[in-house]
Image (cartoon, rainbow, N blue to C red; front, side, top):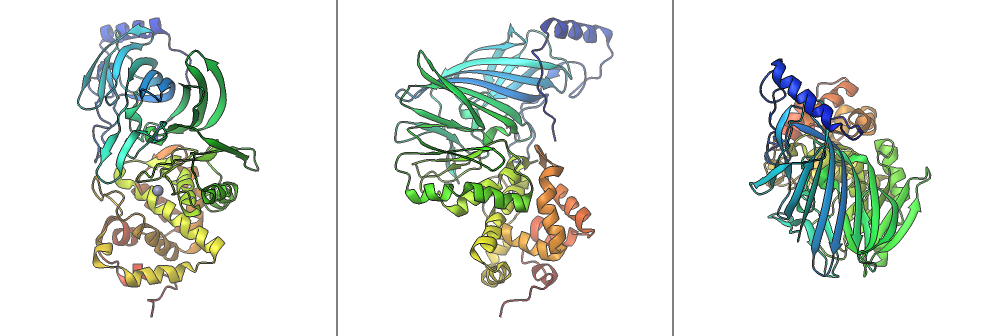
Length: 480
Ligand SMILES: [Zn+2]
């Protein structure tokens, strides 16, 4: 877990003086985390994507100003990053794919920079950054953004819509295609976006709308996400939207945007969002985000994604099941994010189980019967699918099918009351943080007062068909 605070603009002179003092007094320890300035790591150390994200600092806020021209695809950006050094830094990296960097300033002074690898922007401030102190980096850049090709999901990141609009969506990577960022889910930050587009275009992004104004190049639309957000959960989408605005009972704003041609059935499904959020709240605890809604694309991209406060839906994927799934992620995946990508069952197994719970409550589905039927029909390859440490590129293979079954079995094995309590309180334990599968197991053990190692080995960490005691716990009996 990382903590996030907002800081005042750093005092440049104080930083420089302290740097000089610390260097001359020789009190420092060397190496990462020490006081002697050294380069920050060029990766955040994920076991699957070690180069994504960076080390040595923690971002508190992104303040991004973007100008986008749909006819030329040209994007011009000015990113202001407020961060705090977690080690003394002689240099540090941001992540940015393609695009041309025009200038970088750190604490108000021009900084040297270079590009390495496929997404590293290496920044060398004119004075070292001292461990524990806040700093501010400003990056000016421009270019035509390009998406990242993912063999399983298709295009990720910045994508062009047939209408002439554009949108950003992708997992595990997306943000680096349109702004400089510390691209790891372990570094969440608040996100201020001001985007200027020609007047005839509309914009939707994360969080709350804070106004729009006419400028020389069109209209500037401002969106603010005050719930700390992992970079890949940020989005912006430009199209000729039809907006639908509602409020939750507590006043939380709901903004949904529909691309031209969105079927009425999708609009009717999204109109149920207040009911869906009330239902999810009854299972998972208080809605953890400051805003809600959805972005309904015309393009059939390969996935829908739980972008924070406002999931983005593939064209024609806007149905109640998918809306329940993506909004369940606001608890499981967004405000509690993965620690490593191998923990992704903490996102997908739970969001998938949310649709089981919805079906039980709203459609009268007998979950025990559904579970037993699926056990009966499951193939060897199904049982051999992994829910933990499944390997890069395989994160999303079994979590949707085997994942909800594992959770249903867990509810029987732990006992319903303890399971319900875990579902409802997990978000408060790790709110706005990150968590691993081991942490989830330990929390479930703590709440249920049971050793769950055998169950987790059988269903989560291992593969193969679980032994009878884990397959048919509680009152479950094999289907005839
Ligand atoms: Zn999902």
